[in-house]
Length: 397
Image (cartoon, rainbow, N blue to C red):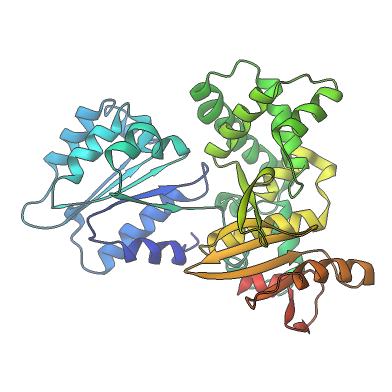
């Protein structure tokens, strides 16, 4: 079991605060394990076991809790008096109107509540209304490269580990499949079909599943490319798969809500405004991309860009695409009032590529940190204040 220390520390920072902790993320990214590890940390810190109440709604042992009233009664009956109780509700969206039970439990001063869910519905509609200002979202992704490396203490080749990280997936359980492509594919197929059927098709009432799958594969093939809903619809229609812009927009929203895709918008640095046209999409896991695309998976520059984007999210940044004049900057990363600029490319050895990547950053006239992240295995290089970093070292940083 890999310790998700950064996320455990994040949860600890909100411990005993009058706020509901909501852990979100795609199915099988480790949310249940995170709650289990956090609960173990509480026990190590002296919290009595009877003061923790844990329910995993994917466990058949709790299938009898099928209404919000039963959920409320089950937890209330187990609350210890005159002390803090830690309540863990895993995949709570399985219970109809669960938010009513959560809201009622939240009103009890003795309850410190932690819940997880596998789609953004958890924070939409009635729950967000009921809990407005009273919850914090802690978003969990599959394993970072640093966490993945930590699982192989005897492997000294970072290059080999990075290749395996991309090919055999960053979903935690795949580590137990011993880099067996057949087993990994079967496992990823299970995740993919569960997300597709439970979190998208059933919830959205989608009838044309092949069309939805075409959109998923199209987006997986176009990570890091500027996309618009119209462009996607036109491209697919020209390929013989007629689809309306409205349908594309609906499908993309569903894919992002299930956390299989991540959308990032553009920001005009000179004009200081967000742009409505042209967005980029990134996939939650590169092993899943290989599962979807097969041989088309190998395009190292775009894959690295996807990996860097997810890592910036893990580190707590808000991430945008930068536009400065006619140039594009891969990422503007903002955190705690600080701004950083990132370009990502496979290599800077080619002079034309090097000039192109540097020129965009040189057009930004402020003095915030500027980086180019590449797979060139070299020490840090400085181009008049623009630092070139080796991607694998940065990912471990």
